[in-house]
Length: 558
Image (cartoon, rainbow, N blue to C red):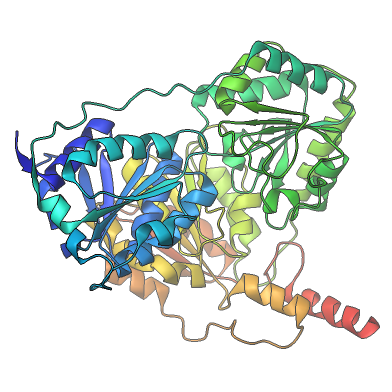
């Protein structure tokens, strides 16, 4: 059957299992848009408002569903706008495919209108960047892209699609389905070695990461940890992959890592690293373990051989999938003299969960406590980046069914698009987005996308009138010299949300929040609650004034 390249591309995506695409339309990929007209709902296209929101939705889709998030953007500005989502998907190890319309092949190298060399721009940002010159190669390239996005360390793939290639006629058959790539399993010898090392420990620790766990893998990890009585720590923003109510869960290793978690990692004598890449945040800038040979005995398990030994030389590096590894380990737990070690680590974490009253009109500690009480057990929480995220990331306890969609890259503007994607993927689950006032304004326009697709997230804007994270750094390093971090002139967020068709309210006291939240959850549309929070409540344990005074005192003493 003869059809144009755009039709072949869409047929292949459907065969691979894609059911949802996010995009902003562009003239450079009209043939793909034409092909989407005839899919009969097999591949839905969500028409978004900005390519940054598009890419964040696709990255969040990949993290939540385990299948590549598909995003479609036009050449030049469309692709560069979308680059933030590619970077986020890479740092999150989230499967994603970015399809970019491209100038015609005969124009390359002349600096044509909106011309970009995508392999050069995205070569170090994505797992693979490629340009397709012939329509006949689309099935081959798409099959490889799907496999690349999903296997090893999952991540983003960028495919440039020249206009003339997409419009060219071809009779090449489409793909008929995805190939099967079972998760690599560990060898019996590797399992025995890992057990032996753990059994010799006095202070063992499990440090895990990644979003590509299976349900069976998460269950097996908890079963192994609890049967072995080993403390478990999540890397930055992956605490939802292990039941926080388990006595073995002892916190997260991320931005603002608590002294207790740092002590746990530093004093462990054996660390079982599962599916983590030992990044900057989980190692306190590579200071908690010596580079390249840690003083802790290290067992590193990862589905990508490129991650093994990349920074730290393990005693044994096991190239296999994380779920396959823990499922093989779960039936033979280890034991040793570390019960007090695990109990103390859990007690330290629980002590750190306690909060005193917060200054200002709305106490975010009380807000999170209320969410913990009323949200269903399978709620999905999303957020972008900023100090506000500490409330949901550190003080909300994620049970076995709850999920967190948040960017390891520290990208502002992720939360609202992620919430829209989550509502589309899981329409029967409650989706809550926490966004700072600065964070919200980076992609708040995707509320229009939410209305268009009947997505109904509840967005809580933590409105303190400043770029909080930067102000915190500013006060610590340049106390009382405020520059560029105030946000005077914020809009009336409730009025703005109502203009988009959302239910919206401004909440000016902690006592008003429960009733407002109930109304928000009961709204037939999505909802926005503008929470008036004091800048003083910049961190849960230290006020802005205390930061400034401590920095000025230290400077004076120096």
